[in-house]
Structures are given as C-alpha cells and as structure tokens.
Amino acid sequence: MSQPVAVILGAGIGGSAVATKLATTCHVVVVDRDPALAQGVATTVERAGGSAEWASVDLLDLPAITAFRDDLLARLGRVDAVIHLVGGWQGSPTVDAAALSAWDAIAPGVFGTVQTTSVAFRETLMAAPAGCYAMVSSTATAKPTAGNAAYATAKAAAETWVRALADSFKDSPARAVIVAVKALVSQAQREQNPDKAYPGYTDTGDLAAAIAGILRDATTANGARIDLTEGR
Image 1 (cartoon, rainbow, N blue to C red):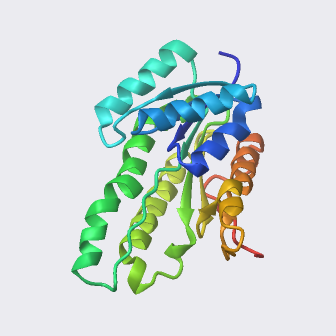
Image 2: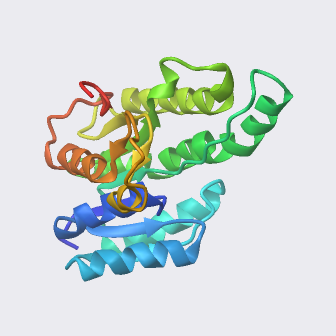
C-alpha cells in the first residue's frame, strides 16, 4: 500500500475525530475493545471519502497485538503511525482506598496499553520513513489533585514510558510524541449542552488537527510534549 497506514487505538470521541481527520491522507485502522464502536468509526471514515478498516483486539495481550501487527504488515505492507487514545477516568474523594481501587480499574487501560502497543509496534515504526507513536495524555500530570491521584499517576507513568520510547527512537527517523489535554469535548456535546462552558476543554477537532499536523510535519521533535491547553 502506497498510502500511509495509521492505527487509531480507541474509538471514542477523540479517536473518531482523529480517524476522520486522517481520512484523506492515510489508510485508517480503528481498534477498540467494542467492535460496534470500532466499526462505526471506520464507516464514518469511509463516508468521508477515506479508506478504513476496524479490529477488536485485546490491547493488554502482547501476543494478540503482535499477531494483529503481523497481519497488517502482511496485508498492507506498512504501519506508519500508532495513535494511542485509550482512556478511562475514575476519581476518588481523596488519596484513600477508593484511589487504590480507581488505580486498579484504570491503570491497565491508561498505562498498560501504552506499554504493550509501543513494544509491539516499535521496530515497525522505526522501519517506516517517518514512523510516529503519539499518545494523548492529560494536563493533570503537572498538577495532580487528591481526587485524581490514580488517573494523574497512570497518565504520568504512561508519559514516562513514551519518553523512554522516544529515547529508543533516537537513531532512527521515528518519533514518539505526547499531546496533552485537560479533557475533550465534541461539537455534538456542545450542541447537546449549549449552556455548559467546558472550561479548558479541547475540541476534538482541534485534537485531530494537532495529530494530523504531527504526522504531516516530520520536523516535530522526537520526545515532544504538546499542551493543547496553552493560551486558553
């Protein structure tokens, strides 16, 4: 396949916006544990004039991810970008037993899937002309609160892993990049809640534009952390 291949991990509002934005420039592979959600986003990409497919893969199962990667390479011949948008948020009253329960619930998805997917696709991205692993993180890592201890810690751990991945890319054309947001909001959500302000939130369209820009502009530095809330 001559067209770049972008694997979107997570078919929520962020993944849907990014996948649709990339419709005209990449063959998009949408991955989510919910097959219906993944298929729906792939269909949206195709309706936008793009080329897409979908898969439901256990992103905590390294052998399953490796088999998925090998199938993509066998059929498509390349993978140029992996965009990690696997989320899940849980808070707690303070740093207490509930925070430990929140950690147990969200750490596998927020942190563990970054580990497994980066390990599975690392060499593939290094072999690409301008491979990129991009993770969407949270501004909560800079100022964690008692109520988001588990979430902020999981995101901070994931960022540390991605920075280590960036270091492993230093002798190749590949890049690992972090994009930070406070939270995401779609245009549909704004229309459904016209009286809600969503202070500091990032529109999914702006996130999608940022990701597309990173993939388009190979000069974005390996190891960069881009805060989309700056200046808001």
